[in-house]
Each structure stands twice: as structure tokens, then as C-alpha cells.
Length: 129
Image (cartoon, rainbow, N blue to C red; front, side, top):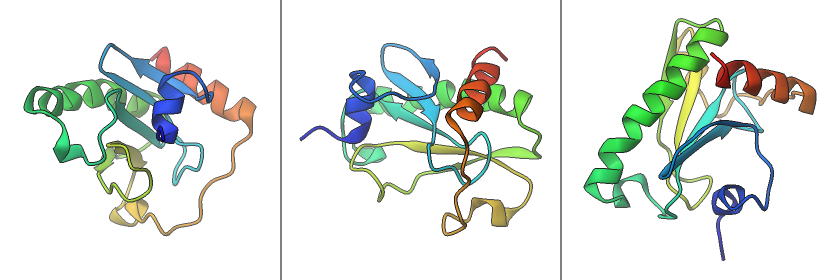
């Protein structure tokens, strides 16, 4: 059965897309820890990030870097934190989070609730940064 990320990649489930190329896609997390919390996902469905072939693993960071640069240009923060947890969805992915302190990376924090309009406006601003 395809992961939820594969279904997003196929267009079966909508997302707030930030960037896409032939190998990767980035979109806003719909249950964000912070405003601008995004995911970077390889289009190839593999369970763990370190299961990616070497060229795919090394190429995901420059893709993520460009997304992080755009998030930082739009969302006020000290930096963009990066986290690889891999327990939530059985499809490799990287979290990009706007942060001001170490505690901002705590995934046990209550999640933000944004309206579809807020997600759309934020995604548009990040994409166009």
C-alpha cells in the first residue's frame, strides 16, 4: 500500500506544495509544530532516509537547502532546524522547522491549527520567495 506521501506525490491527496523537481517534493506539514514547518520528501518511496541510494541522499540536502532559504525569507526565525525522525510515516522525509530556540524542535509540543486559507497564503509566499 502506498504511503500518504506517495499518494501526495501522485496527486491523489492535495498538499500545500513549496517546491518540486524530478526526484523530490516539499510541502507544508498540515499538523505543524511552527508556522512554516515543511517536509522534504524523495519521490522514490523508501522507508528510511538512509535507505536512499548515495546520489539521492546527497542530492536531497541541496534541495532542502533551497526550501529552507525560502522559508527563512518569509517566516521570522533565528534559523531553520532540520530533523529526521522517520517514525510518523513509512516514507523517508526531512522536517524543516523555523526555530528560535532548541525547545522549538520538540515534536511533543501542541500542533498549530491553521485554516486552509492560511496554509495557501503561506505556501504561496514561501514558493515565491
